[in-house]
Image (cartoon, rainbow, N blue to C red):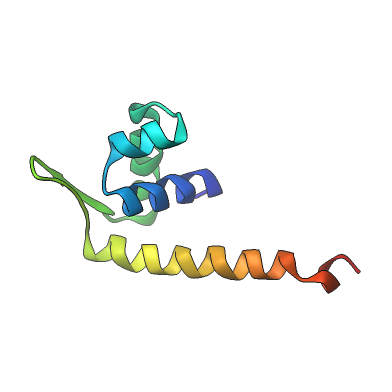
Amino acid sequence: MNDLQIDYFMAVATNLSFTKTSEELFVSQPAISRQISQLEKELGCRLFRRNNQGTELTEEGRLYFDLFSKYKAEFLDLVSREDWLE
């Protein structure tokens, strides 16, 4: 798992669309799909349910969305501390 995969996952989860995410990030839709598939394989679960009605998070996807949201927020908080550089 890497930050790119997490960023793509978070964007797709927010947009609930691979196509919209691809347009937003200026990355091909197949490239985003590949990264999400690799992340799902590594995590051992499906993160999204894809069907004719669209894209939605699975229960596991919602749990990982919450986890990664906290991870990103805490990471940004840590690096923004002034005493971090001392």
